[in-house]
Length: 288
Ligand code: SF4
Image (tube, protein in one colour):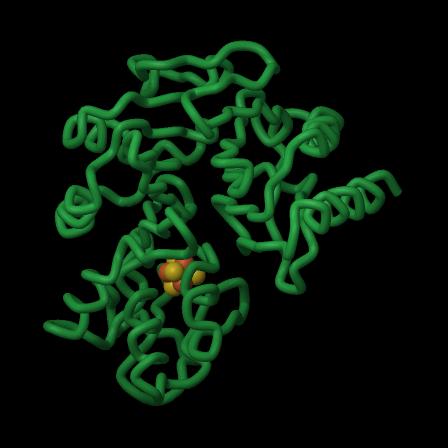
């Protein structure tokens, strides 16, 4: 629960507020950019929501917030916002909404497929969300892009009986029991239309997941900036920047229109060729 006595002084007057426990994960600013802004490395309420749509998105951010740092609403309207997750993004892809603090508020995604659903990384395992995931068909595979974003994988495995997939190089004590450990740097087919692509760099065992030659889930390897250009950063590269650039180059061999990251903005290009051009532009930028 957010605490009124920690309410940031920058918040606009009105019921909704952010308190000092914000970890600046950017979730609320992505979900309701008209309402939440950034100040002193924290989020705050720039202005109170006005329209019904703004209010819903502001409350979706409230329930998504990994640290419960947003306050000023409760009851039925919060329950309603909670019930909107997983929220469809496009085609079979949903944003699970509820972020976990242990993955620093990373986005997790559900891909609904006739062959069995795929959960990418881990949402906060709150019961209302898990019940909704059940109504969408549960989870067959839980693809973990890298060691930082595994969050509630144990609870998810217990609830859905899903096989968890993680590259062996990122396995640690908390993930030693995952069912599938990927090896090496070659892409691995996980089923029809599912390809795991090792992209070492951010961590040694980072992997992207390509679905149906359309959607690329990138973990913390690659994301979009506010202007739609692609981005990656030395500042959050824990293993090897040179490897990360090589991994980016590797993506030129694949076709996809969407990039869906753990952190940062997601983006859709008009065509796979356009997305490839954006990857090339980023390669030129990071080579300077
Ligand atoms: S979602 Fe929560 S932790 Fe993340 S930036 Fe907003 S207030 Fe801060």
